[in-house]
Image (cartoon, rainbow, N blue to C red; front, side, top):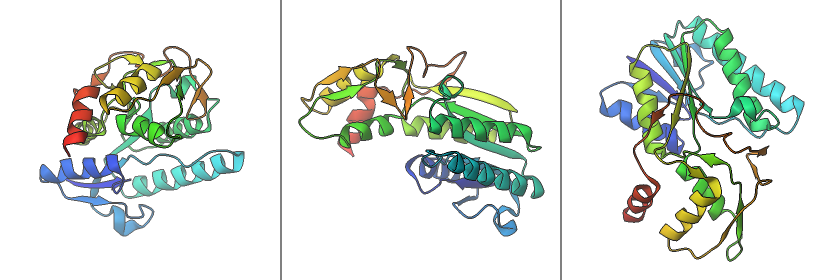
Length: 241
């Protein structure tokens, strides 16, 4: 079973590629899927790319064109399973360009002819940690108070690889981490575990990816597959690396 992974050179995609190769599957990463040769013989296409910044209607239209071209290419190549990464909460957060783009990709995949599985994932530990690293040192960090079940990229990569080995759902699967907590509380715990004395301020009006969150925006809406890595275990593993 040949697998093509888009986004395979990024953190999450690289872990997906590694998992599948360790299982003995031939994997190709980050070639142009619009080229017939790239898709030749591929049974599964995994798209874990994040959309670019969507600040204008033209940007969203360009993203839609990219998604349509990809769907047409994989249909023409008779790919058996299209797997795409999405995000929990996107249906409730359509005032954000980021979530609009993910919802548009989902809609176009669902309207296509290729069997598919969409994984709606919780925020990643790695992405949340970058928020702290990208803010000015020595200042309080303001974060939303909405609850979430963040997860490690390693756990998400395992679930994506599992989906590649399973039959298409022709639907969405929700995936999240093992601990439910407010985003501000998560960040405060993360900083403490890293030995960082910075204070985190919870703010119900703080934005996440351009979206104003309500209390449960980022939580699964039904049964979800859960990763096992806790925040403390992840920080410990990162510190030991």
